[in-house]
Amino acid sequence: MKILLCSLLALQMLMPVQPLEASKDSILSEDQVPEILVIKQEDDEHDNVSIKTEEEVREEIEEENTEHEGEEDYTPREAMDTIVVWLDSEDFVLTDYIEVKDDSDDCRVLSYGEYDLTELGIYPLKLIAVDKNGNSISKNVAVEVVEEPAPDPYVYWSYDEIVNRLNASGVGVGGDAYAIAESLIGMGGYCTDVANTFLALYFGDGSNCFDTYDIDPSQAQPGDVVFYPDGGTGYQHYAIYLGGEMSLQGNWLGTTIIRSVFINGSAPQFRRCSGH
Image 1: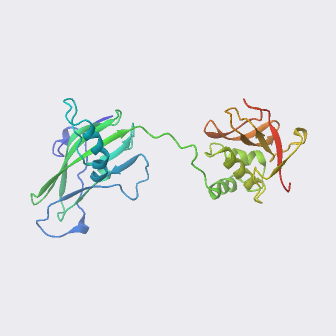
Image 2: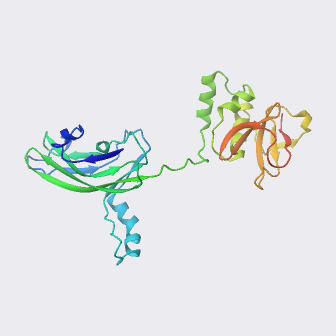
Image 3: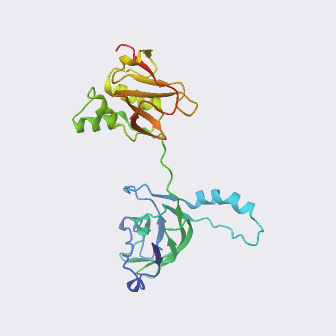
C-alpha cells in the first residue's frame, strides 16, 4: 500500500488524516516554537515498529558513508530519526509515532514525501509543524521498511505461562501425558529444555532428562525419556515418550511437535527418570 503524504490542507483531496494536536503539558509562552518529536508510544502493543534515533543512525551510517566516499553513484545517507517498520505492516500509522510539543491549542503537521510498505527501503520525509501564531519548525525523518525477523526458535515459554494454559484446559500439572505434550506444541528451545519442561509438568518433582536409567523398550511408558545418540543431524537428541510409539520432539526443525518415536536417526533408546 503506497502512502503519499502532503499538506493537511490538500489531504481533503487525497485521504483524511487528522492533524496532530499539541501537548498542553509543555506550555511555556505564547511565542514558543513547536517541537517535533519522533517517539515510540509506551502503550504501543505492536512489535512491528521500532525507533532509531538520529544519534543511532549516525553511528550506523558513518562507516558506510566513509567506505563509499568519492563514489559518483553513491549519495551519502543523512542521519535522522528513523521509524523502522516491518514489510507489509497494514496496521502502521505514521502519526502514532509523531508528537508535537507547543503552547498552542491548534498545531498542524505538514508531511512531505512518500513511503511504500510493500517495498524494502529507506524513505526520507519532511515534517513541518505550524501553530496558530505562525511559529513553525521542520524536521527530517525517515521510514525504513525492513523484513520481518525470523522467529527465534530458542525463545522459551515461561513455566507459569504453560501451567496457566494447562489449568485453563482442565488438565493441570500431573495430568495426562499426551495432553501436557499438546500444550507444548510450538514451543521453542533446545530438545532438552522441552523435555525437562514436560517432566516438570508431568511429575512435578524436579525430574530431568539427564538423571535417568536405561529400561527395556518393551517396558516404555508415557513420561519416559527417549534418547538418540544421533538425532539425524550428527548430534544427540532427547524426546519424551507418550505411548503408542508417539513422542514429544523438542526443537524438531526449530519447533516442538508430536510425532512417531522413530526418526531419521539412530534407534530410540528408552530411559526412566530416577525415582520413578
